[in-house]
Image (cartoon, rainbow, N blue to C red; front, side, top):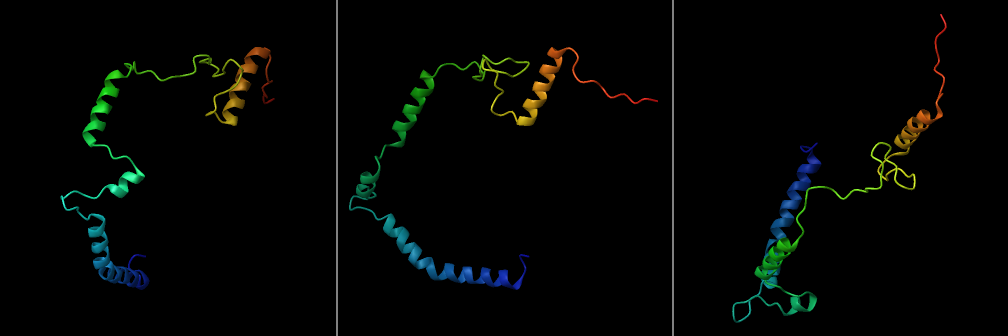
Length: 126
């Protein structure tokens, strides 16, 4: 499909458009990066929008935050009030990630054990 006449034409026209717009794009880039008389980039407009912070300060702050952080023992924060076998919490609810079909299956297993009899199996009479 990439070799069709239409795609070849579109590729050719995109290349022509790139050639045509290249000088405009270059001027726009130069204007965006205009330098002050001192040789620094003009940041007055940028400072109105956002605060400019040097990269070294951010790196130092990140290092300090990493040192202050509590040592992690590698365990996930899990709901400790959930039964590991049935996956029910203290309110009798299944986890949010469990599908309705899985929950129904688990409920059937759990209630089947409690009832004693459970479902009667169909045997083939020969």
